Image (cartoon, rainbow, N blue to C red; front, side, top):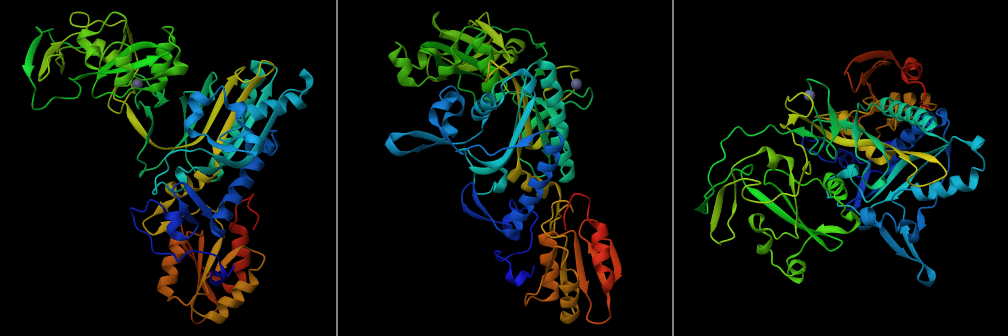
Length: 534
Ligand SMILES: [Zn+2]
């Protein structure tokens, strides 16, 4: 391909704090927050990743299908509570209510029921590589990491029993790990929560990279404990402080968040409750829901109580302050409250604070539970050493769903974000000069940077069988070399002004090979990894 003919935005040089190297290098074009066009270079990478996914899933015995991206909204009634805000809703003819597919568990189950007639048909694994739609917050700087429309590879497996599910789960997990390895992505696998999918067991395939802002999981380097943030636990060692007498004090100038108690009023199916935890901890919705359902709450209808709702129930916000909770209010406190002592909180008498507040003596707690996120620096629940954060992104998520979606089958589901994987590859394989594509997924295996235009043209013609890029633009050699670094093709071929020996530089190792022009096709051919069609 000639660069002069390629549909590409004008590239600039890389900078270290680039959030979106793909956009800067001309692989993608942003239409709006979370909506991107994949330009030809980006599209080629996506096709290469998809080919690897197909190869590995086919090998694991999965069969490719394409399920509709429009689904009847009625399929979503059961999961509307957890998925509702993320659903893109569409209205069809005659007021027909539809949604743009965020995932396909329900449809896959219907397909399986139609195609699987007897138990000897089992197990069956189906998969697809298709766009997905989720109305999620995708800032202008997230690139392909978080988008509202994205391509996913998702597989669904159906089984007569647990043993078969376990076997396939391992096979598909290995297939997805093979995909990631071939794409040059390094991962860690951690136990995770089932979230919006529901089900019994799940694991996240996490890709960490230095610039990542989000903590995805916590791990202990001493004993090896690791878990996704949603389910990670920590140990709370009991306070060694003496329990001091309760005092009322003027509003303090400063207060350590770990000292200050906060109360979050909530309502679940008309029942009022108060969740209590120190201000340095964050409520974990999944743990909270689990703890509440253990106490008989209907969590499908659980939400933070507004002042108006509390007033309607015969009280005010103040009425529900931690030290004056009426008996009808269910008080659930985080384990850190049980372990701590001598907390501080605003006094029901305005303008004052209460100091040395202690549970049981000064306020009632109906249940203690682990309802907050564990955080970096907390103590490991197994050995007590400090937990470290794994920062990065979720490359894949796999679930044993059991019978959640079907009484007839045990089911597994397996997801890999394909467009996100493009960005993850870039994040794990970049330097200050730009992208460094692994040879398996690079859109072109090499780029020719001409010094001698005539010889470069000859070389380009002799490499017709290979997928290479020729920078035939008017830019200076220096600019071309800078652009070649930014674009990240595995080999850069510089053709000197004189002589017929060219310089082939490896983008990753910067190693230089001096090769006679006539030997370049053979050199490139031998350098291409198996599985990549050149
Ligand atoms: Zn540990």
